[in-house]
Image (cartoon, rainbow, N blue to C red; front, side, top):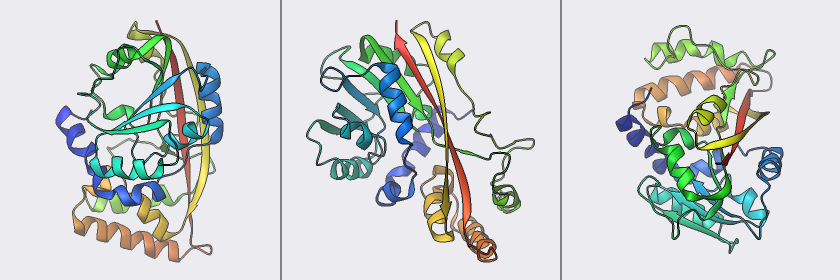
Amino acid sequence: MATAADRGRLRQTFDIVAARYHAARPDYPDALYDALTSVAGLVPDKDEVLEIGCGTGKATIPLARRGFRITAVELGAALAAEAARNLAAFGRVAVINADIEAWRPPAPAMFGLVFAATAWHWLDPATRYLRAWEWLKPGGHLAYWEAAHVIPENGDLFFTQIQEVYDEIGEGVPPGSVFATPETLAEHSAEIAATGLFTDVTIRRFDWEISYTADSYIRLLDTFSGHIAMAAWQRDRLYGEIRRRLALRPDGLVHRHWGAVLHVARKL
């Protein structure tokens, strides 16, 4: 498990690639937002929303289009500036450049929804549920999900084959590790229930596929904290091998499956 120092160091690496992040990272399925608003019973003119770690606004924009008033808090100054540009057309969205773990809302218990999209794991596990509970109004909802790499039964073999290169450069996965499938991606309903702060935990699973050229796949990898933190020689070796192997494919593409487990829980 990552230490607090690891989390603090790695979560700030995304600011280095703010300009590339928005274009390279995947969009979440529309069905996920439909499920979120339905399960939480959200009403745009009634419920204010707090987003934890909005990045460049990938998950903010779909909710902004649905008419919600959103306070989006982002640690990285460059990411927050990019989010502000991407959300400039939405007058009901405020982007705040701040550390969410030190930030305080204008009023206590004011939000109908507190959510994090591929950002929840960066928060301190010892305090994150309590902080979300404090920010929510009575009956409000917490929601979070991650965009994770999954490999279905008939998935692209490229990802298991390229692991030998990760091993070579000292960035391999621990022995015995296996890729998750859309069905085995971890969910945390028991963890949420154990806090004693939330009830009515709902889990929804989503998966989708995106095909990448060598260039677009490398642009994606360049937005992941582990790849950003690699030494130049490691990236050169890995990316060179990705280009070589994909050039041998008839379509030149790698087909990556994404999975997300939406967690929604109501404040007690």
